[in-house]
Amino acid sequence: MTQIFNASERLLRCGSRTLSLSEPRLMGVLNITPDSFSDGGLLLASNKPDLPCVLNTARQMLAEGAAILDVGGQSTRPGAEAVSVDDECHRVIPVLERLLELDTIVSIDTCKTEVATQAVALGCHLVNDVCGLRSYDMCRLVADSDVAVCIMHMQGEPRSMQNAPHYSDVVADVRLFLEQQVSLCRDAGIGNERILLDPGFGFGKTTEHNLSLLRRLSELEIDGIPLLVGLSRKSTIGNITGRQVGERVHGSVAAAVIAVQNGASIVRVHDVAATADALKVLRAVSRGEQDETIGE
Ligand code: HH2
Image (cartoon, rainbow, N blue to C red):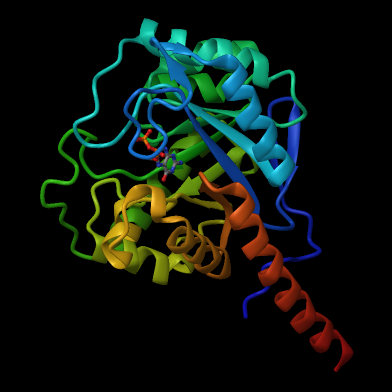
């Protein structure tokens, strides 16, 4: 088994906070949307964030082991409604203000530089950009601040990305894109200690593409930059198990464990407690194996 829990202290610098990645971390998903594919409508009432409910969910995720809370105000699923900058801000800004009072790392999940700018000004620690820093302004925003950024690969754009996605070799193509974005970051002055890379499961990818990426995840390692993986409850899990969105927890947990075994440092999940338990088992097995090696 590859060394998953290591003594070497790898750190992610994210604004006023630092996250140790010496063991795998969980990012809890909080979608303040009416139409997210799995938790749409749970945290939004009459197009306003249901703050007591958001805070309860956030506190529960932290108690269950999440190290990062990822807040999104627009669904990325194909066919999701377009949301204006103002509407997205009305959804996420009140939530971010409250979450930033908690002892955790707060991430804003957006492609819109205007939304990210307001979030960073509030003190948000991480910009989760599913558009992969393709916007010059988003790149400048990150470069001119001290926040971390998650650069995700997506083929096409959310509305049409699942219409016959095509690659010559999905792993090589995704790697090439991520390498280009890392080099862009280097030119812009964003150090590797502020970057996370994400293959973008389900973003312009078939189930087979997603399985290849998961199987060969270690090939996406670039300059030691940590990998973030989000497969939680996605249609790939549904296609494999035949389960509806609400019933995909077991499949999602299995995918998270495989992702960590294959090199992921952070997993983005809806079901924090279940994933945390599974990673504890993996940790116990992996630690035992390391102890045996040390004892030889
Ligand atoms: N997946 C989703 C949204 N943001 N960010 C990263 N870095 N990686 C992902 O895989 C990822 C992401 C889609 O999941 P979800 O937020 O649950 O759904 P929706 O986009 O419908 O709100």
